[in-house]
Structures are given as C-alpha cells and as structure tokens.
Length: 74
Image (cartoon, rainbow, N blue to C red):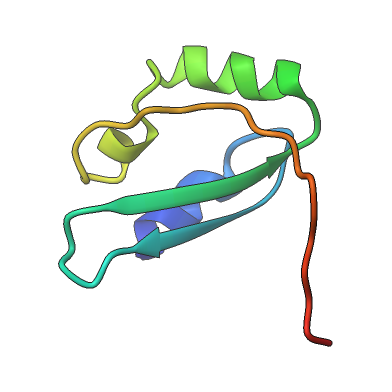
C-alpha cells in the first residue's frame, strides 16, 4: 500500500499510522497517532471524513480514542 504511505507522510501532525487489512480484503483498520485531538479533527474535516476512501477502500467511520494501555513483550 505504497499510496497509503505517501498519503500519511503528507498529513501534518501525525506521529505515525498503521494500516491493518483483513484476510478477506473487506476491512481496513487504520490506527494513527496524532499530536492532538484538534489536529485529528482538522484532518478529518479536510478529508471529508473518508480516509478509507482516499485509500480506495470504500468508506470510513473515524473516531478519536484515548490510549489506556500499551502492552509489549519486549
């Protein structure tokens, strides 16, 4: 998904993003880390709240979450 990489590299205020595609190719989950909630709100408004459509995968349902735990085996 080289296009997705290029897309996310152009978005200001994003620390990083990870795209997860289901094995049946019907679902794409995007987890992005933003500098602030305001930055996320601005980006979703500018993208018409359709990040998945920008990647050619249909529609999206963007929501803002708070990290409550990070688990690492390292």
